[in-house]
Length: 192
Image (cartoon, rainbow, N blue to C red):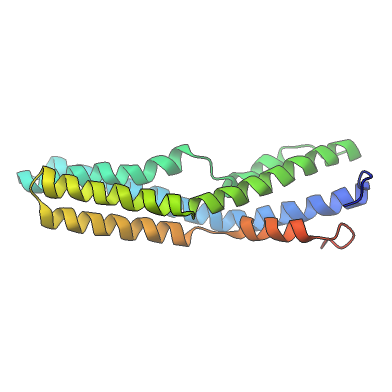
């Protein structure tokens, strides 16, 4: 980029590029988020209801611990922002009626795209894999050692690891790709 401020036409082209990419990525991000949020919620609630309804003490323990573990899958999705999902709506609320407004909107759009890319990288990082595996193993140990249910503990740990890994590996990565492409763009050769 040049040392001078970009022209309004260049700002508009860059803004259109980011808006289109964020919008395109949001559909998959929403599908992924809804699938996992409501999937973990259904699993938690199903096990909770089963724990309340069963007269068998061992099954009650298995289901109660399973419900608590599944809730740990819901909480991050419900609390932590997922920028790839929310960025298009946040960006659409900013005015762009004047060159100055478009410049401010472009700065915000670049921030949103970079935030979405960073979030995707973090959600796929070794930290997330290690945390998910650690929680699943801990839940398995609680059942296996704490409640004397080694078979159920092993199955719960393996199931938790499998679901967590599927969740991590199915997460969309469009924002990461789009941000990398955006950084490589020649200011005069931005797709319209």
